[in-house]
Length: 132
Image (tube, rainbow, N blue to C red; front, top):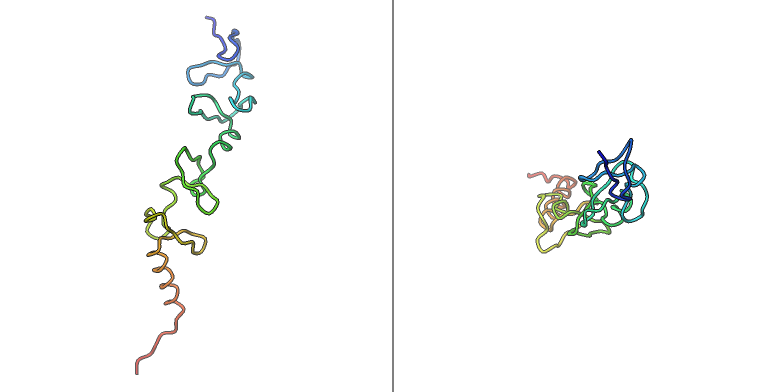
C-alpha cells in the first residue's frame, strides 16, 4: 500500500505522523506560520492548518485567569486578556453590569461587591462601641 506525505506527495516509509486524516514524513509536519517542524503539541488554525505553540500564542494570547488560549472574542482589561466567562466579579462571580468594575486587592469587583468588601474591611478594624 502506497501512502503519500500530505506535504510533499512522496511515499512515506517507516515512521510517520498521522494528523487530521493526513500522513506526513516526520520532518514535514510543520507549522503553517513559521514553517518549523512540530514535534509535540500543535493547534489548528481557523483554516485547519497546523500551528506550533509559539505561533498560536502570538495569534491568540492566553487568558490571565484560566491560562488557556482565548479565541476571537475576549475582554482586555488591566493589560490582560480574558475569556468572557473568566472576567467576572471576584465577589459574586457575575459579569460586570455595564462593563464597570473596580480593582481591589488586585481583583476585579463590581461596584456593589466592592462596597460590601470595603465596609466589611472597615467594620473589622473599627473599635466596637460600648453602650452604657
